Image (tube, rainbow, N blue to C red; front, side, top):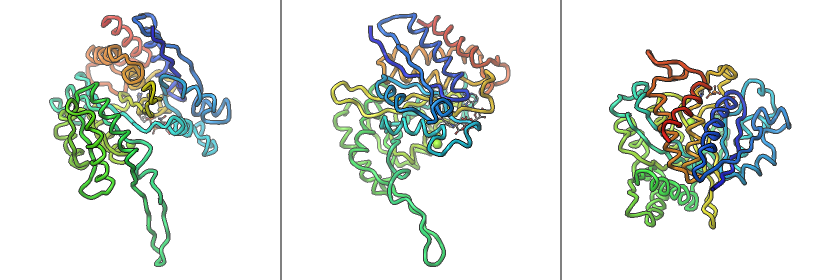
Length: 370
Ligand code: NAI
Ligand code: MG
């Protein structure tokens, strides 16, 4: 029996409600047995941690997160903490976790469930069955490069500078994540940069090509210019399996790809750290893309699918449980095919349900699938 240690951080707002539904799924798998079990611990983060401890995340919580096999994170923030000191605003809790766990690889899947293909901004035939993984470098690039400043010039005008900066090490480690993922998926990686106009693009292409050598020939590598990639994502998105790219292009391309899937309430993500040299184990945090949704918090209306799918990613990428991860994806597809919809994805003729009904329906579907 392999026991996986999970740290659950529901956070604030709808994070609390969607995490309750993840706990049902965990209970389901624990009851199943099957060689795997979960040991969970919960802690406060964000506004909830600020209220209790005066900080957005405690040192003890960060230490537990580092020791866990995976952290499942809900969402943080809300108007209640608008006046919290800047360093302890709810979002600071998440930022500190990302930094202290050195979570440099952000995985954003864009999956289109057949039942929601008509809710996409693209035509059904373009998105039905779509399954792309965007791997975005998260801790380097133009958002962090120095100098970063606005200077007043002698003529009274100003000059703003951001610096795009990448090292061989940073590029190689994100490329490895992409190639390793591709091996568990469709064995195809597109690396998006702009080597035609950017030095970081030249180095990116060179290092990705070099890193690919230990993955060839089973994993295919294609280089693509980031602007063409943006175009291809709306023209023929199903040509992609894994897309690896830098922080800035990844920010834009992941949001673009997400639109194929319909709603914020459907989108999971993972952020991975470096693999331990001996064990291969990585620190990892899994969270929905959405925030704490103060407008619907506490009303039982939130769509729990993004958080449940994030847990599914934890099974796949941190627990070696891809079969169970597939089960979760199939259960989600199943309840959607049955016509169940939370308010955010409601369509004419479908059955509107709340957070806990959706969670319960997914568990029920899992029972029929195992
Ligand atoms: P949001 O993602 O919380 O909400 C945007 C809109 O989408 C709202 O109308 C909300 O009701 C809806 N929505 C989001 N998730 C949903 C779900 N699962 N089911 C149904 N509807 C859903 O973003 P917003 O409103 O910009 O931010 C609200 C708070 O969340 C802020 O304090 C913000 O700082 C924080 N936030 C936290 C994030 C995190 O914890 N990673 C990410 C984004 C925002
Ligand atoms: Mg963005």
